[in-house]
Length: 275
Image (cartoon, rainbow, N blue to C red):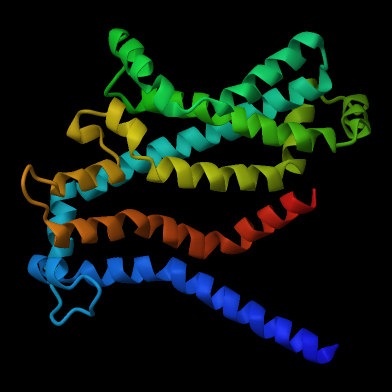
């Protein structure tokens, strides 16, 4: 039995090592190529750099208008995730506690909207928002993210709100809490593990999204970090060195956030899975 457990342990280690290798190799290659000259990247992209061209990073910072694009990405991601979590939690709580036929059908419509691919509605979406003169505005983009992100968040919150005993809310009401105070003092803190999971999913999606911002934000001053990397593509040439450096600079903030918050992220996901 112990021999079988030992073999299983070794197989687990080998399997996890293979998965780690598959995931980490692209990042390592990206890091190496970000300090290579253009000709070295095109001739031998899989080798170690023979000389380090750190000027790629200064070119990338300047050409991307990095700090302005970084501020745009932070504003769009922060407000989108904040409003998605808040509105979805309130809506799911309302649907669960006021279980009318109208609310049931509305919930089913919201869940059904998740199966519609974005590519099917992107042209009408841009046409309608263009006719309303709402394009090229980061707040319009935040509004769209809230619309696209709420359906999945409501679906996840809905299942967790059902597991909260109604007696908790009734006790708060007896103690004098209004419905709004009951939600923010009792329900929302209990939903924190779910909120952590939804926050992670939406931060990764919104921070790295390219398609929707490319349709909405045309002005260079409104661009996010993923959009700014497009500056290195010319009609006939691609400046690979600064492009690789710009990709490293784009993913760097998310990696830093993960390193500092990994304890809380894993804790939130684990508590969410137990629920």
